[in-house]
Length: 374
Image (cartoon, rainbow, N blue to C red):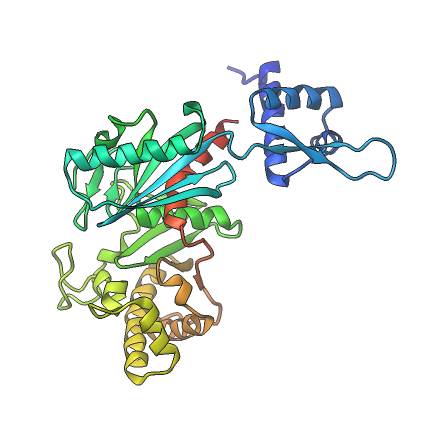
């Protein structure tokens, strides 16, 4: 059977091309759109009217002109559709509203201790509804709600497949969706951070993302997609064994990468990252020695992973804002000391995503899905 392109397909293609061209350029005139897409002005005009009527674009000022009338500038309406990112932690919850540009435009932090009880899920759902209500958007504008959790999730986001830090294994998204009139998904927090990294970078196709926070998390990026694997636990480098006789890990094993390369592994009980790095930058011998040991174990793990996945490594998470290029240079040197294949080419980088990367990454999949439908 032949795959013939119909007139309807062409109209859909023009509609999509015009929207995405405006999306990518910020503002464009009708004539610029026609020129870049090689379309007639009547065709462009017809699609612009339709996009305006659907609330997806708007006239946003005029372009300067030395002769004749100034052309109207067309731009997308960033809040024509939105998504909500929710990050669940032990004693707090953070909420974030994300627009079609993948930008945060409203945020809220709640003091709400986690409990695997109906009252908790109902209370948090009520807080999410109140947060959305305050945004003054229509129900149909909300694409979905992503719940970022410290646990592995099924590929469809409906279940927690592995949860030993906070959220329990087997928890179903129904605990929230029964209270919310929107699509809801569970998302692994480290993979959320990696999703945001992809969103803010156009120069990265394949990479290993390491989220170094209180706990360690990882994600494998292949062809600009988060690779989940058959059972959804691809990228969980935190449970790779570094030393079989090492400290106990929350997973029940010993000497996992988590026990050597997380913030919990770096800091003492009453210490903060800020105080640690203050001492480190003042060259306190004890802190320099601790940091050197931390980087040494991190280098062992990075080398092992790099031997299998010969790609870039991105260091993200809570530690990101404290890292300097000198730290990365030392890390490169330590990896080269340990590897069978030393290289002068750098492959370890500091994350470029913002501090609220987990929250953004919980909302971005809904935005991306919507953009793919236009």
